[in-house]
Image (cartoon, rainbow, N blue to C red; front, top):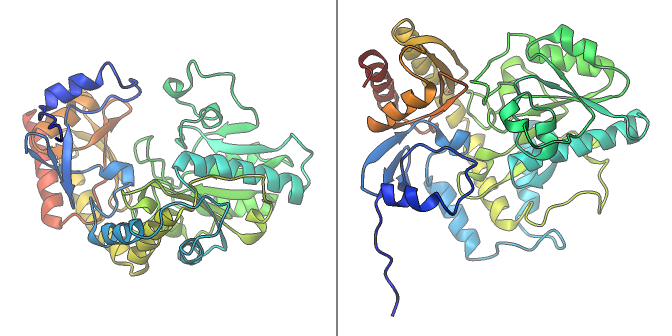
Length: 408
């Protein structure tokens, strides 16, 4: 006889996590059990509008029909071969992803951090094999307040002490300069520089959008000085900002683009390093790999994601609804909002500290049926699925006003 596990309340489930899960997250006190589109439901049946979308991993909403269908079809055929063998889904995925980004070759991985780590290795290898940097001396220039992941190498060039403290010794070979400062960037680049690695929009920092011309300036500088431009589009890419890639707002084509999160459609972890052919050709068999990278299930879901983006529908939705988002936040400026930054359907909102911390505001919104997440003090991030309707978005902005003005 099959045993029946008694249903547990949200409070019971949260309490059950305490002794058995590492405390590396501080989630909001909501226990999600079901989701569809832009809405999630907790174990008691309460519904919430998802205004975070898994930090952009759910750009197409929860359980998008085309993505679920692609996953189901592939689950019935083949899920994993490892890269010891070819599979019948990987080539098509790589071809279409390269075409979508305007680049040539794809290195498939799983998580965003893996894509960043892979790019670091590729940039260094390129510096030694192509640029002629002496072995062991390659440097990579990054921006302050970056977020590229949490591996030991990546936190080595983070400026977030919470992410760094207690995890040294750190990996050398990185130079940190202020974001959005071309003069500082140029001063840091020299003959040892393999690459400049930046986020076109700094998501974790609070959706920090650089000045017009910054990305074009980075592209011009890296070309002139003979190093690679690596754009981390793991959060900003795949439709979020109203373009396929955020660098397209300045008509820039980097040498290397890093993708993840939305590439897996909220179903499986999928990431990729997409680059010019002469960059990725520095890798040879045995020098880098991943058992699950490029697996058939990931390739099938990733291909379905690319198919959604090839129509341009989601990019247009993000651009159009981004106007609604920006105008709504502008109307709240001075009424609890002290500042905000938007790019497409993505916003960092600075709340008056007198009203509460970002965490407190997030909890108040949760009680009103809206899910967001805080970052850095009194800042909250808004990144709803690109499938959100204008009515839902305006409703969320109305709830934010209620929370800020009425201190709900």
